[in-house]
Image (cartoon, rainbow, N blue to C red):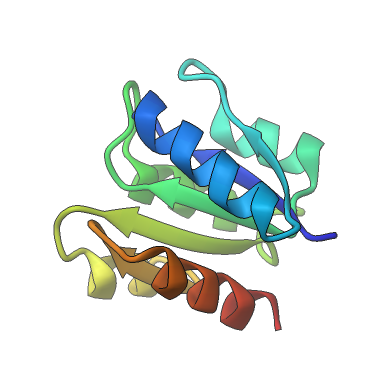
Length: 117
């Protein structure tokens, strides 16, 4: 059962994602809004991180850049999300994929499967 770590500050979105992903057989955990993303990812060792670009206390693109520069973080699969089209920037910084909000559940699930292959 693949493990997904959510780095998302919208609690409604976290609840919806947890419900959807658990129904699809994923093991899901979500970061606390104040969590150190890089340290949490290295500790949790998820199969994939689903990370929003705009987070409470940090920018997801900056967190992705730090993760990629940290030993052990260079190979973590990361699927970035945003309501704005940051696809090129996210991919340039090392994201495995990007999906723009609002997205359909099937589109997210297909992108997750692709990232996990």
